[in-house]
Length: 620
Image (spheres, rainbow, N blue to C red):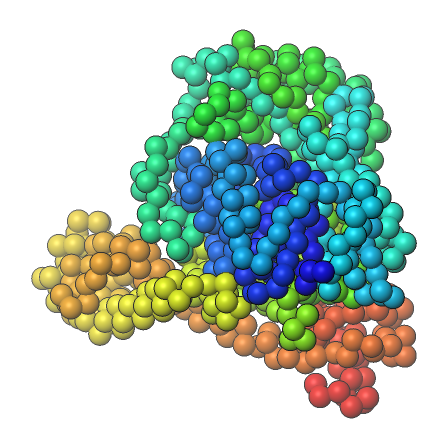
């Protein structure tokens, strides 16, 4: 008998199990292959645009992903530095084998957590409540709650050209029976598709013809608990497709599962195959191809930008037409995979199934795409499963609190008809949801759940206090023209005629914190000034925008506090459209705020709903 059973050992499953065990619940993580825990099925990297924000948030809540990539990364870069700080995003190449091994080690060593190998084929239910799982070997594990994180394994079907075969990913069998069991329990399923590029032998690449890309000189850790990263960074390389490449690829379209009708399910629009790029962007003469190392101890490289399910002979010829890859040898062919997922109008904001109590769904089976999205969902499912067993209220992050909150609200409230990927543009308040302040936003929750150690929490509070002290000082401290004008002249900024506070100078776009730090009083300087400086600079430069977003959030929170009973019968509300009744009944929003975000629900529908709730005695 376990408190919580987690089905699947991918990125979602590891975070769910670690969170559950960390909060004191006796947890079982059951996976089809204990040697491929947290395996990177696609690119060997963590983070990226908006995805890096998710990793920082998972870390602030007490998750594992950030610590693991800090320990196994082989190249670190902060993306988007040329743009505003709201969209800066960390990314790191990982040693694929080391990453999996490190996560496996962390999970196995967790107190309260048992890892076992097996294929779950049935969720056991006591009435409409999850009560355990049954494996294909007939072994029964009893549990008070179950979290399913099966990734792409549910009835997975791999395609290369017109050939297809069952598989959860290359080299591993699919999970059979679980989808059908959940269908019987009242949970609907659909099919999505994703894919991966070929891998190549680095010994057969002409590196001299490629452009290399190094990591940052001073790597920035993902985890707030990592003091410093000291590694030998490995470069990535850039090349391009050309018209010959495109002609070769087009010649195989009659054998493409995507364009011959073999694959009927939708794939991720924002991570398209090379075939889709050629069709969608016909006017482009070339497409970027990044060669990313798979690790320190291998010569294998991942061909980022060349995801494909074209036949093997076309993959060979196509890659061979690219500069630097003329003699390249493929070690693993690219492929597409179709798999089952469960549309998210069937779950609550705490990721619990509406059809089966104490059954939680997390990861790619929610219709998402990416390790980071899966891990964030797994983290939230693990926490909420524990809270459900403790009869505590669900842990739901708002859109103004975290990208994780934006993602879950998007999935549950709006749904998705294609694999969901996180972008900074999805967040209305992204100036407040930066990668550098996730600790200040979320660590209080992780600490409250017992997932953040005292030392890390105290460090966060000290950083916040120091930053606020410096900002106050910058507004108080005035400098005379003869003091500041030499600095302004050095950076081609307009001189001043009167004494001004340093904050006014720092507001200028061309001024950096390093330009004015010399004017701080000696007792305000501290060892962590360099790490605090970017936040100080950002908060002063964008003060007006930040205050405006805070004001918008306060208005929005009023609607989020207006709760809607879960058992309300929307068909009794006479003055709203049939479409609105159907959508409200399907999503069952928990608040007026969530209801207003459902596609197709109009302001007039919300007004009528508000009046109806008052009429039946709801405190709105």
